[in-house]
Image 1 (cartoon, rainbow, N blue to C red):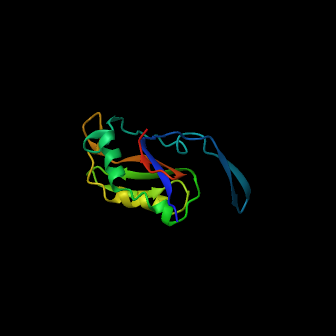
Image 2 (image 1 turned 90 degrees about the horizontal axis):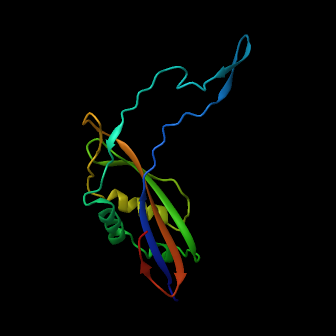
Image 3 (image 1 turned 30 degrees about the vertical axis):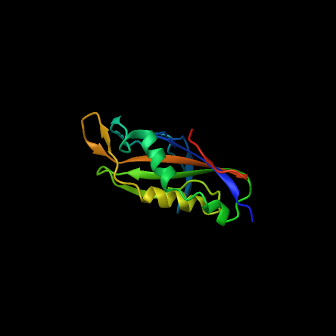
Length: 162
């Protein structure tokens, strides 16, 4: 049996979103139904989010993170699970805590063939990161996402990064 080949492209995508979308919902009570507008910031509550001055970082930066993933990802996982030739974009999110430890690790994609589990396994092996810092120097937790692209092809094994 020939094993399909795989090209693994790994890059880090940082997403931060603090937007509140205008919406309303209906509450049923004894006197009838009332419509409640929650389009204001959290029902009128003022929310002050600290400005992040420094993003969390893997020691050595993005290239070192990619090298860590490349050296720890078992590229045979799609083969063992009989992945069809295709391009699979696996997105995994995790939180870098204020102490630099990773937690809240989970998949935001569902490609299957064990690929999400494999990337999560690798992220779990990660050493501590340098945590995010606010402009006042406080260390804060911060959510990051990593996208690993598995390109499954016949007759070749190539690992590269974007």
